[in-house]
Structure formats: structure tokens, C-alpha cells
Amino acid sequence: MAAAKPAPTELSRRVTEAVSEARRLHDGQGRKGTAVPYLAHLLAVTALVLEDGGTEDEAIGALLHDAAEDAGGEPRLEAIREQFGDAVAAIVAGCSDTFEEPKPPWRERKQAYLDHLVEPGVSESVLRVSLADKLHNAGALLRDYRTSGERVFERFKTRSAADQLWYYRSLAGIYRERLPGPMAEELARVVAELESAVGVETA
Ligand SMILES: [Mn+2]
Image (cartoon, rainbow, N blue to C red; front, side, top):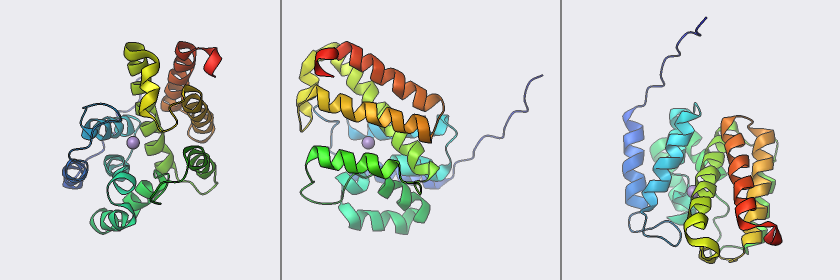
């Protein structure tokens, strides 16, 4: 017997406003080491969140998840709170590594973010948007590795494949525990493919 069809989530004009804000805030930024407009990443992450059953606030959080860290720091976070509310601001804050400028050293910053994801108080909303973000990044990395090889790692601060693999492998393990489901499984698959493509010598 077919299950009852669930009512689709209705999206209000807040979502369109967030798309517009995301475009404005990241205008002129490209994806790391490429000419691809940053908005492409934000739209892709938002699609992953909605496909995973995410709420409107989570979709807006996805559109703005990099806005505080990469486009205005804590004042930006407060502006997002004013415009879109506490729930969205909490998602943006929970998806940010740091608001410090200059940013702390890479390994320290990523370890702190991993520690944050395993805290008992981290919300399902933060986990969903954060997982969608990492899944899109890992997928792009795998695709670019296949076309460009080792050079793709030069776009990262540490320039090290081993560091990136360590980070993604750690993330995949955490999401499988904390937000099990198709997205966590997909990230684990992408990370495994990335590890086998890059080769064991760097792992
Ligand atoms: Mn991102």
C-alpha cells in the first residue's frame, strides 16, 4: 500500500529575500580557486537541505551559512538575526568555524569545529546545513581532483591532501553518528572515493 503523500513544505518570500541577500553579500566572490560564482555553492547546499526534508529556516540558513564567516563577521550575524530571526542566526553561527580575523591556524580551527559538532547541544538544523555544506564541498573536490589531479589541493591553505582527507573522514564519521540518513551515507561514499582516488600514500 502506498504511503500517504506528505504535504509539500511551503516556502515564503523570506526564502527569495535570502537568495537576494546571499547574492549581494557574496557578489564578486568565486568558489575556492575557480571562477564559479559563490552563489552556486549556496544554491546547491540549499537544494540538498530541502531534498533532505529541511525546513524553511534551514533553507535560509543554508543560503546564508557562509555570510558571517566570509562576508562581515559578527555584525553580519546580527544583521541576519534582525532580518531572518534567531533560528536562522543560530544555524549560521553553528556553521561558522570562526569569527576571528585573522583566522586561527587551519588544523586548530578544523579540530575546534569537529569538537563543536559532537557537543550534545548541537541542533539537528545545524547538523543538516553543515552536512549539506560538507557534502557539496567534498563532491566538488572529488570532481575537480578527477579533472585536475593533485593541483586541486593547492587551493587550500595547508595545500595538503592528507589534511583535507583527515578533515572529511572525521566529518563523515560524526555525521553518520549524529544525523544518520541518505546525506550522511552519501558523504561517506564521496570521502571513500576521494581517498581511493588520491591514494593511500597521502592518507
Ligand atoms: Mn559553505
